[in-house]
Amino acid sequence: MKIIFAFLPEIVLTFLAFLILFLEICGLAKKKVCFTIASVGLILLIPCVWMSQDFLGNYLKGAFLLDNYAIFFKFLFVVLIFMVVLLGADFMEERTNYIAEYYFLLLMSAVGLMFMVSATDLMTLFIAFELSSIPMYVLAAYFKKEKTSTEAGIKYFLLGAFSAGLMVYGISLIYGTFGTLSYKALGSIFLVGNISPAILLAMVAIIVGLGFKIAAAPFHMWAPDVYEGAPTPVVSFISVAPKAAGLAVIARFFITSFAGISYQWIFLLLLISAISMLVGNLTALPQKNFKRMLAYSGISHIGYILLGIAASSQIGLTAVLFYITIYTLTNLGAFGVLIMVSRYTKSDEIKDLAGLSRRSPGLALILLLALLSLAGIPPLGGFLAKFILFFAVFKEANPVFQAMVLFAIINSVISLYYYLKVLRAVYFEKPQSEEPITVPAYSAPALYLSVIGIVVLAMMPSFYSWISQMAKLSIFSL
Image 1 (tube, helix red, strand yellow):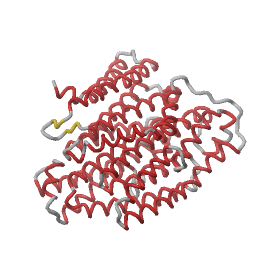
Image 2 (tube, rainbow, N blue to C red):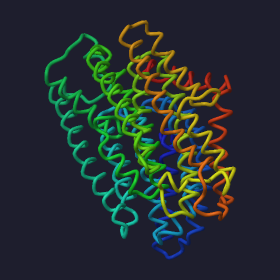
Image 3 (cartoon, helix red, strand yellow):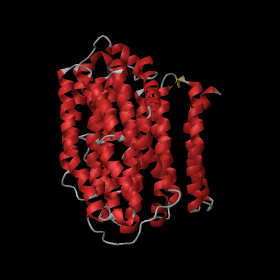
């Protein structure tokens, strides 16, 4: 009975997904019915995640760990999927008749993400990795009559399959060398500094696989085209959910399993971090498509977050979780505004945001807050998240880390240009149409959640203290 409650969030999500699919088979899955089941079910899922806190422990012979660290990310996944469902309902209903399948794939991908953050065995991790990825490949190509969407799905699938193959190769090298895939067992082995060229190769292969998942440079090739071609509600999900899960896995796996050889993987993470910040920010500068710009912006933010993981300290991990939370809510706010606008303009170009302040002052304000937060302008949440993260890394008193913090600050200044470029169009350019843009009643709460994350949540000391506890009682007590 205990294991059922431990797996309750995953069980409820799977039930919701198959209930929607069953209604579709029976011909009862009307568009509003699917939306109602998904949205109400996700609200009811919150107490399920909360209840699972009473059943912390190892399950499936140590392959699945339910700890506060995993529960934190499961809370985050429920909130972000709920926001995606609310924001994308009208957009998807207007452009496809396959609504039940959309919700099914979205929820099943979330099940895979939840298993990822609880995995403490490399085989369990890989199965969860694929369970979350395959629905995303389909969702990216969901508008099958649109060339850009089909191209996005094919590119996402091909590069995803290649990265998964590399990841399996790395896992096989580890198993062939040590005969175990358990994070904890590997941690005991590597405490004595047991390393060989095969293990270094395995480490690189796994980093490549997870680097693809989080769209870190130079494994980001899929992101700009997938962001541009996939349906915007799908992109809002892809832009945050797999990244949060991938970063959670990187932190848990490397800090737990490779603590004894930390120099090697920390060097790799710092290198990827620097490349991601530079490539993301410089390539975002000339972009004219808003989704492509946000793709490169996301790559740069991954670079910042990897700094916190590389610090491999309690304060660093707390800063990472805080940053991921603020970034998730902020990014969904930016995409939420784009979803509302693109329903009218049928375009995602920056020029189509011109004059938004006249057509919808409320949406323009949300976009202003979101972009300034992403840029790290005080006193918004993005500034506080960056400040805490950079402080945690700088506190390591290592010249390399301190130089990386300086490099990150320079890159944050560079990012101001392309964020302000969008805001100039929103507030100072003439609109192509004077038609007001309205927000559906059920989409408004998702936009309010984003504003709360940007303005209110980051200013609450109790919220940071809660995150600190969720980080403290996870990896470091495994």
